[in-house]
Each structure stands twice: as C-alpha cells, then as structure tokens.
Image (cartoon, rainbow, N blue to C red; front, side):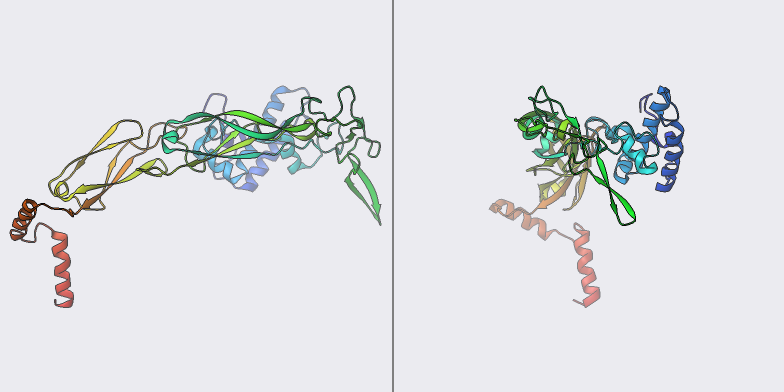
Amino acid sequence: MSATEVDFYELLGVARDADGATLKSAYRKLAMKYHPDRNPGDADAETQFKAVGAAYEVLKDPQKRAAYDQYGHAAFQQGGPGGAGGQDFGDIGDIFETIFGQAFGGGGGGGRQRARRGADLRYDMEITLDEAFHGKSTEIEIEVSQICDTCGGMGATPGTSKRTCNLCNGYGKVRAKQGFFVVEKTCPNCHGRGEVITNPCRDCGGEGRVDKPQTLSVDIPPGVDTGTRIRLSGKGEAGPHGAPPGDLYIFVHIKPHDIFEREGTTLLTRAPISFTKAALGGEICIPDLDGETVTLSIPAGIQSGRQLRQRGAGMPVLQGRGRGDLVVEIAVETPTKLSKEQKAILEQFRETETGDECPESRGFFDKLKDTFGV
C-alpha cells in the first residue's frame, strides 16, 4: 500500500468484520460531513467525500470486499486479481443518492435522467499454460460501437444543435394526474434527456455512435488462470448521445497441457518409473515451464501414488512474488516385455523372497488368513 492509499476500513472508521448496516451507517455520517453542498469551495472536503464513497462502494459489495480483503488496493489496479484497468467505484453521486435520495445537489438538470453509460462487453481469450506462466502481450480485434466521427457523439447534424424539449421544458419528466394522485413519468418526447435533436446526424441516425472494428492491445500478466478477468476501462460500447463508454472485460481460459495439470499455483504431473528404480531408488528429471530442469530424488522402496513436491517450481503468483510448487505423483510400472536373462534373474529373486521385502502385501494376506481362515 502506497503512502496515498488509505485502508478502506480505517477511512470509514469501522472494524474489518463490520456488517453491512455498520458500513452504511459509517458512510452516511461521513458523507453528510464532507458533502460538497455543506462545504462549498472546500477542495479537501470534496476529496474526502469521494474517498469515503469509493471505500463504501467496494466494501458494500461482497465480491469486491473479498478481493480487497485478500489483495488490498492491488485487487483493483492494472492486471489485478479478478480484474484490471484501475479502480471502478462507479459514480459517487449514484451511491449518495441511493442512500440519501436527492436531498442534496440535484444539479441544473432537475429531474433529467443521467446520460446512460455504454454497455460493458465480454471477450473470451484462450491461451496456453506456457503463456499463462510467462505472461503475454497481444492484440485483439472486435466490432464495437464507437463515437460517431461526423457529429462527435452529439447525434446532431454538424452545424446544428439540440434544443430543449418543449414537452417537459428540459426537466426530462412529465406529470399526469390520475385520480387523487399526481404521477411523474419519463418524458415520452425526449426519453428523459431533456433535449431533442431536430436534425439527426445521417451517419449515426442521432445515436451519436456507430459500429466500427477496433484493434486493442492486451497485456496478460504472468500467473493468470481460467476465470481471471481483465478490465479494459472505457473500451466497451460508446454511450448514446455522447455518454461515457462502458468497459471491455477479457475472460481468460487456459488450454489443457500435455504434461501438467494445474490447481491454483500448483502444477501437477504423473511420472511412471521402472520397478527397479522404485525398489533401488534413483533420480528423475522433469523440465518445467521456465526452461529449467527439476531433479527429484526417488527414495528406495517408493510406492505408486506417492507424491514428491518441489517447492517454487510451480506457477507464478498473480500480482505477487514467488511461485507455487511442482507435485509429481509416482506410478511404478510393471515390465511387460522381459528377456530370458531378465526373467531368470526375477525367478532367482522370487526363490529368495521371505515376505519381508513387501510388508504391505504380507500384512494384507495375513489379515485375510486371520479373518477368513484361508
């Protein structure tokens, strides 16, 4: 955590196990205290108001809170676990209005609807385990709504402008009497925007956006896994009528590997060895994804299913330091093709067996005798 990053729990003045009601109460008090309408011209108060809003936006969401508890601020930084591209706390005004309504700072738009943000998009990317190990910089091509170059996203023909809706007088809503009640509805003429376009742009039809192919650069950090989500801020669909764009989310999928399986940062593989190596001991060499060779010592008398672990030879820790482990499961292979000399040697060995060489086998058959009398 850098000097400018304050712990969200400390910022709200709550314990790390605080429940939702406690978080909401703490945020409400601080938001009232630092609200710009109560502190006109106070830049520090405005900064603090935004900070407590950002903290509450993360901690009130169970998934964001879990990510923050595990990774801190790094969970929301570029390439951070579960998503990248910077913190996304939404609009602080939206958070405030959700709790307090519109008692403060309605702004000059009155009941006018806030410009609708562009839609978020999803892109599924499949990469190899080697690419997940080393990281990858690549480019993707997508077709996405972008700001219309002709009208600059305004939706009106160049040289013309929008005008105030004459039905709602720019309010964005109209009122109608139904019996004893007055009902407020979205203006059907301007659809809540408070403005209408009399001369729509010919290229975008007044939407302010058109579909165009786009090439984007994507950086895949080392250690990603299937399900890792990378956020490209502002690379989703452009919002209508000049509204902010949405985000593009890259969902990572790892292709199966010929040798290794993966569990988190642990790499697993199965290594068959000869029965002589299992009996006498020895060494096996396993190439890892880093181009190095891992040498594992085989103890004499090892059995099938035994797992050998090499620390620090697994996958990199995403947005962290170090690597996981390599786990090799031993499978003792019984020979199926023997020469006459080999068979003779094994026959000689069988004649000298006492049963003590394989205590597990001897113990099993002793139990059979004791249990069934055979």
